[in-house]
Length: 148
Image (cartoon, rainbow, N blue to C red; front, side, top):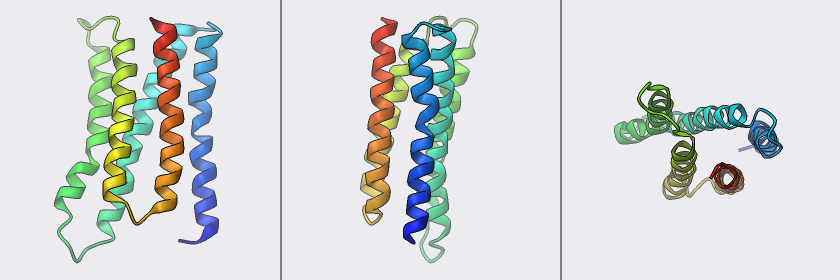
């Protein structure tokens, strides 16, 4: 992959941290704290669902091999992210923020581990994903701590 493409991916990846950081700061400063945490959860679920697209695209680039299993796994982030948001919206499920933050943090870590096993030949991407994921998970932990 061209170096300029890698730099663009890195810039966009780090720019994707801006809402995470901004919403965490709003929650820490208690500026619309509960709303900031809810928006953080929604954004985290959206970003998590986005991560499966990488595997969808890579699977389609290898038509000589059966990619059915990889395509199925590529749907995991979007389906689980959606189900988490549905669970939060159910009328009989109240006060789900702590659980949602913890679940999303674990899902982000799980997916990074999955990618490390599946994408070992894409070192630059895994390095970027590691940095982004650990930042995102740390921000989840901060929100968990201030929400207790």
